[in-house]
Length: 363
Image 1 (spheres, rainbow, N blue to C red):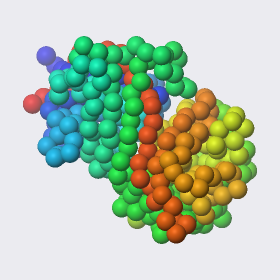
Image 2 (image 1 turned 60 degrees about the vertical axis):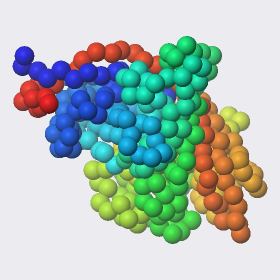
Image 3 (image 1 turned 90 degrees about the vertical axis):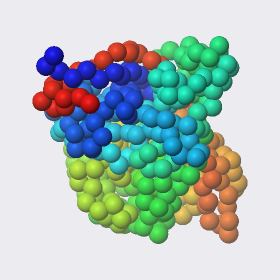
């Protein structure tokens, strides 16, 4: 056989989609692993025509799972963001939407047993060290995908996957506010640099001449905005201690604006070189935390509660997302404790994906 076969599950997790692998079925070294994932996805073509990617950053994501040797966790979740066209693989961030399918995939792979009713799966995000408890519906010890929960950006209904994120403040940079400031100024734009589940640079839409309610298509066509945003993002990355982020998808970028659809705040999230069609799970926690923190760029846009926990409803291009943030206010300082969301997932396919033996000859 001239190709190497790799077992995989193909799943939708939240509003993202991609292959889920058993880490043991992939090469150990990251350089070879990156080559394999580029071949799997088909990165290097706008339609990923020679792979199973979907031509958008939310469909070129990869989850790699293993039984955890951590004292707390059941499952280790290693994430990779593969670029659509550039043949790049970023192992720095994690992804909360893809994480929505991790517990179900782990049970499907037999990495841990399922209980009868609901199975609690403790997940360690290897990329960032974050700890997440996922509650999966498993009647009769089988993963259930049918249910009546809807999430904006996904058609139909599905079974709920409840996620509780812990230890996510400073999970990538080591600090809730990586620059030490509530607001910094880069390229003449006020920015809050925050690290909750995902390191982000967050600004007000109006400071870019935007309403914050533009469609994904309108934003993606606005090359002037993206050029300015990228200049701001790169300076923010340096200030956050992340070095040269030119070829890294982190920090991500977010915009805030006054709500119009009954939410707490209007948001747009960038991946970072295209607009997210909905909202990232990780990014939602950072944006919601920014909205709740006095002194950030969210001042004047949000009617803040005085104590936690609080539900923050984020308006995004395709609807709303609720994020439950538990926090304390200590001497007027926001202290993040945990975040909770409800998402859904669905197993789409299972089998083998093939890569050329010239890329990897297998174990």
